[in-house]
Image 1 (cartoon, rainbow, N blue to C red):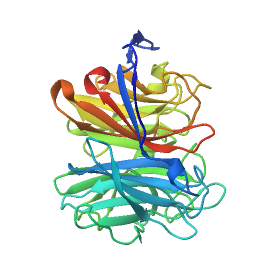
Image 2: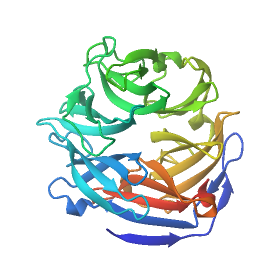
Image 3: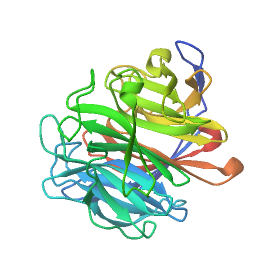
Amino acid sequence: MTYFRASALLLLTSVALVGAAPERVPGLKEQQIVVAAADSGSWPYLAFPALLDRGDEILVSYKRARSHAQDPGAALDLVRLDPVSGRASGRRALAQQDGHIMQMGEWVRFPNGDVANYIDAQVPGSPTTRAGLRVVRSVDGGQTFGPLERVGPVDGVEYGYAFDSLVEGRTTWMLVMTFANLPGGKPAPRARAPAGSVDVIRSEDHGRTWQFVRNLSREFGDVPINESAFIRAGDGFLVTSRGYDERERLHLTDGDFRLRRQSDLTATHAFIASHVGRPRLFAREGQVYLLGRNVREKGRPMQLALFRLDLATLGVASYATLDNAEGANVSDGYYAMPYFRGEGADTRLHIITYKALRPQPPDLIRLSFRWDEVK
């Protein structure tokens, strides 16, 4: 593990096409390497982490591979993280299949306490070929996991990529994507083939079976979207979507995922030059935040950004540049997830993400901030 502390003055600027949104650069940032590429042998490309907060430990799944994509044999690994110290233990393979690529894992904690990881399984091809959504499940809250299984069709459609989930009472919703090569999948208008629609599905039996709820791509106006996230907003939901047209959008829906209104953050704000990579939404202290990879100017290096949203205008009220404010040559990274520890002025925001500085492969890292400086 490596560790450093970087300090900078708190900067406040206003840059926006419509409405001012001050930027915050944190005065304190701590970084730790959770799993190092140098310690990963012939599979040093560590990417796409997802986390599940179990209280006394954080479960982190991530791809252990040779490259960003097109690397058969790539595994989805699991590491257990001490939430305070950031120390990692129990590193092991969570899912692996000969000839397949375990590309993305998405955690779901069901109402009965079961924990599952839904995996974007792929096989080599041009373009990338989805093999159908896979899942591993734990019936003891995340202590042990069963075998890799295929999810299979949901109301005649087989999905390939899971983005996010939300649990309320006995109901679990999940955002998933169709692909033209899988049963029931059709290319979406203006999307890159063979990508299809982003759908909402629902389970009432802890993920044993699922039902189709709504095609969000169609509901939002046949927009070409892929990676998406959602959160409860009043009696409805707030969805954010990454577009193949290099747009980041917000969509406010009712409780049945019917569109009420939407906005284009890329068109509205000059500091979002494209989509936000692997967007994540979370709520804290009555505010809603969008976290993900951002490019402030076309042709400039990627950064990790945290946007505080204004639900009245469906715009950005303020934002924090969490990493790479200096503009280093980050060649890949910033699919990120947050968790919190501490209280009051001592509250820390911890981010699990990955980062590669060219020409090195990416490490799995933890970034930590004073919440008061970035919120």
